[in-house]
Structure formats: C-alpha cells, structure tokens
Length: 185
Ligand SMILES: Cc1cc2nc3c(=O)[nH]c(=O)nc-3n(C[C@H](O)[C@H](O)[C@H](O)COP(=O)(O)O)c2cc1C
Image (cartoon, rainbow, N blue to C red; front, side, top):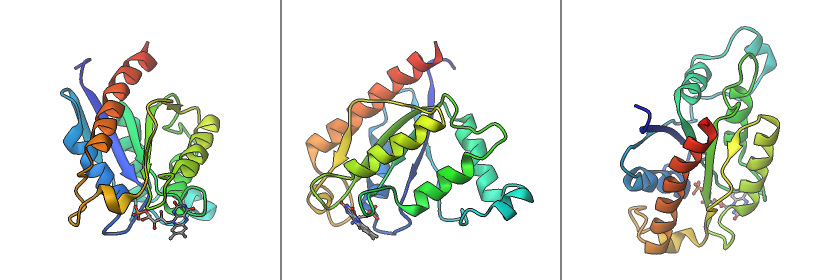
C-alpha cells in the first residue's frame, strides 16, 4: 500500500548488551502507524573478500542485499569506534554495495547511534554519511539522533527510559516517513 513504509533496521554491533541494538529495539516500539521495521543481524556476514565475491555473494550477504532492495527505507544504528564506523558495519555496507545493482542507490536512509561518550557516535555517523555519497543513498539530514551518555539513558534491562531521547527517535521515524515519500516523487 502506498502509505505503508517498510523499513529495514540494522545496528553495527554484535554485542549482546549493545546500546545500539537497544536503540534499534526502542525504534521498533516507537514506529508510527503505517511503518513496519524489520531488523537484520549483521553477525553472519563474513569479512569481505573479493575472491569469495567472485564465486557469488554468500547467502547472508545475498539475503541482506535483497532485504535492502525490498525495503522502502533503511534505519542504520551505528556505534563509534575510534571516531569512525565499526568494522562490522562498514564490512556489511561494503559487501552489500558490490555490483551488480547495488541496493543503496536512491534508498532513503536514516542514521542514529549511541555511545557512552558525550557525542553519541556523531563522528561515526558523519563517516557513514560520507559512504552513502558514493553509493547515492539518500540520507536524511534531520533530526540527528546522537544518544550520548548511554548508561544513563538506558536502564539495566537496556530499555530506553530517557523521555527526550524517546521523543527524538519518534521524531526521526516520523521524518523518515515524510522523507521516504519525498524521495519517491
Ligand atoms: C575499538 C573501540 C573503539 C571505541 N572508540 C570509541 C570512540 O571513538 N568514541 C566513542 O564514543 N566510543 C568509543 N568506544 C566505546 C563504544 O562507544 C562503546 O563500547 C559502545 O558501547 C559500543 O556500542 P554498543 O554498545 O552498541 O556495542 C569504542 C569501543 C571500542 C571497542
């Protein structure tokens, strides 16, 4: 249905107690009416190797590419490692981006991220945006969701308890609905 938005969400952390995976779970709760968010676990995606790619995409990569292609929009939740994108996430984007028909082309994308530090993965988010310049992904500019001081905004069960952060994620998702419609016209 034209008014329905299907979103594929993935987080760049494999950690069981990941704040970024917790932020993605919060997004599932906060999705507006008409938006569905399916999540994809990056763990089965092996390190990129051109020799492997020449034999064909490994099944988890193939599945990832198909889910990206089928989704109306992406929600990417990135940690920050050494002021940049974690290898797990960069590796998954690299695999998915290989020709033919790289699936990020003109795909509406929202980015958010969490960190125990004050800047909430801001530097990693800007590096991730830069990747999508080359890939021609349509990354939404605003609102920016940089969840700093993560141990204070999530509780012991990793539920997002900070109300302003919940409102910001809800606003991001509403904006993504609008952005996805605008990208289609
Ligand atoms: C290799 C490595 C580098 C890191 N570098 C940064 C950094 O540059 N900035 C930052 O805010 N946190 C950094 N951290 C801390 C992460 O933000 C923290 O481990 C966070 O919990 C990771 O996200 P997750 O909870 O989703 O796994 C780093 C952690 C690791 C393991």
